[in-house]
Amino acid sequence: MSGTLRRAAAALLRWGRGTGGIGLQGAGVRAAGSGSGSGSGGGQAEQLDALVKKDKVVVFLKGTPEQPQCGFSNAVVQILRLHGVRDYAAYNVLEDPDLRQGIKDYSNWPTIPQVYLNGEFVGGCDILLQMHQNGDLVEELKKLGIRSALLDEKKDQDSK
Image 1 (tube, rainbow, N blue to C red):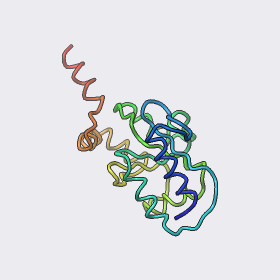
Image 2: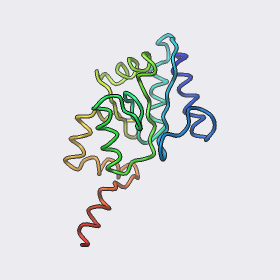
Image 3: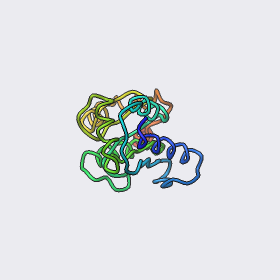
Image 4: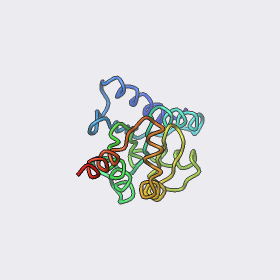
């Protein structure tokens, strides 16, 4: 297991218990920066597998949800906010080149951001945007037990 990924997992576990680490980034969002360091690729896939399955919604992005460092990462954060998704793990790949390349290799997807729902790779910004536009994201969130805030907005508009 890569030392970098081991530190990321340990930090995520600390945040889950509410102690130490970088701290909470917004309501329910756990920014899981892994710091710098190098390590071998041994066990990296298993560690990434554990990370993407630990939370219902996991995002690997450039920057943080509060300060995305690219437009595509910002779009993913905004889509999740529109749906009222606040409780998700967010990993800043800019903090760690090993994590950045490792997640690309793990998913066999060449770009960041990457979104995982219930441990399953969904895609990047373009896929999440398409799911948002066609209503599939509402259904996928419902499968996770997450009610989209857009349903409440529609209900409010229908009652007027």
